[in-house]
Amino acid sequence: MKSFTVSRRSMLLASAASVAALGIDGAAQAPRPPKPQGDPQPGPPTPDQIRRLAWWRAARFGMFIHFGLYSVYGRQEWAMEKEAIPISEYQQLAKRFNPQPGAARAWAKLAKAAGMKYMVMTAKHHEGFCNFDTKLTDYSSMKQGPKRDLVREYVDAARAEGMRVGIYYSLMDWHHPDGAKCAIDEAARKRFVTYTHGLVRELLTNYGKIDVLWYDGSSPLNAEQWESERLNRMMFELQPDILVNNRNLLPGDFSTPEQRIVAAAHGAAWESCMTLNQSWGYDSADDEWKSSRTIVQNLISCARDGGNFLLNIGPKGDGSIPEETVRILTEVGRWLETNGDTVLKSDPCQPWRPSYAGFTRTGNTLFMHVYFWPGGDVSLSGLQAKVKSARLLKTGQPIQFTQDLYRVHLVGLPMEPPDFPATTIVIECDSVPMQNSDPELRLAKPRGGVGIEA
Image: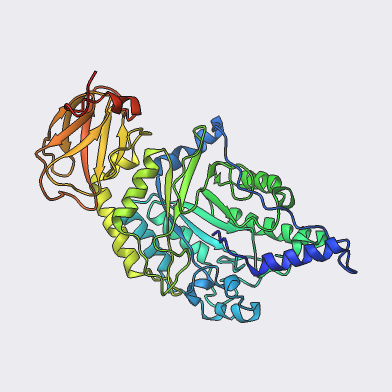
């Protein structure tokens, strides 16, 4: 995934560019590295995208899996670069990389228990190690430690649990000899692009139907240099129904805000990807776990604005899942057993206040998900639709309420929350629920004799 620190590659490329600019012998003809590009955003979906995206928009919740040699090292997926580990030293991890049989089945079972509908696994991360059987390099799980095709095991496990299958592929490669050189040497670029396209072809040919291709790591080239248009044409020839993100520097089918929730414009598809703690790859010292409440909040926030939530796990080097990961996702799954339809089958939703709750909607029904239970009563300001009824989803208990121009006041609630990590209140309205919190409305509110009223 992305890192915002200066890497060894950045320093090397900057040095090469400086030498070339100064016209020093042996470097005067070397081209400058391309300027970094932002990930382009998809526009309004085309009819074909609407067709291909139908299952994905309905799925809403997916599992991201970062798994590679960095999982053995246990200091996150960027350790090779951030710690400047020599390649000769780092690649020794491949000899120790031997995930236990059945590890992928445990991932898929946990995804299903958590209420997730699709999975995306790293086939190759920036470190360059291939978790699959490839004819293009010996730096792979088939030729090194495991002597097994880990992508095959993952694909089979995901399908066995009814999951849609996504494959992550990093264009960036810290191990390949042309991985950095490609930015300043045209012959190296051609070799590396041929290698890259060849690996993608294998991934889209050897594993049956693939539902998502999740690119990452577009540095150090731009879209033209990666020959991304040609790469995507090949992808759709091999997998006509596949979805592709925007990280090979083309708009793709969906955007991928990272560690933040940002809805796309123009009705375009989007997916927020986040870590469960602070790390993508396994970090044995990272104990900054997000709570199940935070995960539910994030899922609701994505669903409210019509997006997907791709939540990452980082298995250990042996493929086992950290205990905290299992605990948190199990709590989320239990909540979704009761509340899932209110989130996973919801429509875009406009209400967003108060601060202790989040909202989703299906038709004229508003779902108020209370994270921080105040006890006794809750309020919803500025609701424009007329409320017909309200009840607790968990228990079915009817809720009494009053409504005026300024708020809906729900009263007589139990003092303790009836559900965890959030309690859902079902509010039936006579029209699509919209909230008005404009300053004009607040200015018109009676102040009970404070000051001089006109």
